[in-house]
Length: 302
Image (tube, rainbow, N blue to C red; front, side, top):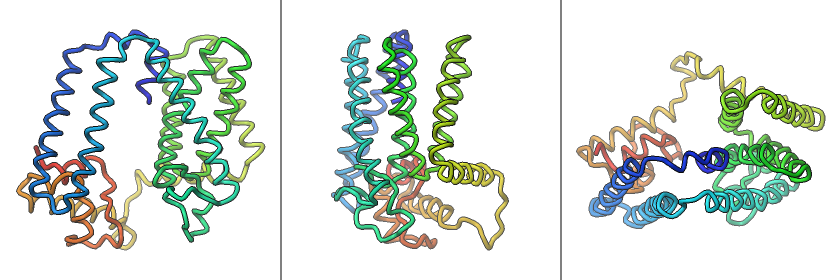
């Protein structure tokens, strides 16, 4: 999404080296072949096939983007499509935060935890996933506001950003708060100049003031969460309050990798092994919660 937003504003990125891109696609092809052979030793064959389908789908998206989206009009069409998807999901997120109800296919459907009942997730597995999507897509509307020619279109874009920020705040996803803030700050510092920078800063400031005035308690809670997240980076834990589950997930993953002689447990099988063969306690958590570790355990050192 960041890549698409950047291309919309900077068409020169279309001249990216085709040689490097083809090498990257060859790497993905090798990964797919290795994943396919890993079915042989994967304990959960169904999950392995499912994981390979997802990997293949993602590779196809990259392939078609590189070889068929070869002019700016195609990219603009995709950009508009992504904006429309965001707009379609937004009312669902607002409905969830207001009513506490969720779609049957949502991860929060039927949840009995009051602290999570009013968190939005739309079609995503959990609020954190939806928050990551919001944090990646809201900057694309900033691009819309910046480059749209008509005042009405810009006003609509600002309203959508305000609603998107409110829904994002309701997810309580601290890392997504930080990601969005960092992305917007980077854009303002390095891609905006002179009067344009002042205009964008004014819009961002106006949106911030609006949110502070209308939902002050949510804003305060969000800043508190961000403060806790930032302070945790430098916190020194002792043995009594250490976050053992996260560490044990990684340690189990390394153990599984060693047991597989470095070949990995097979595509998509890390959660199966975490649930069946953990030697370090992780409770009911089976997701390894680390993207690099998940690739290592599933596909091995290779």
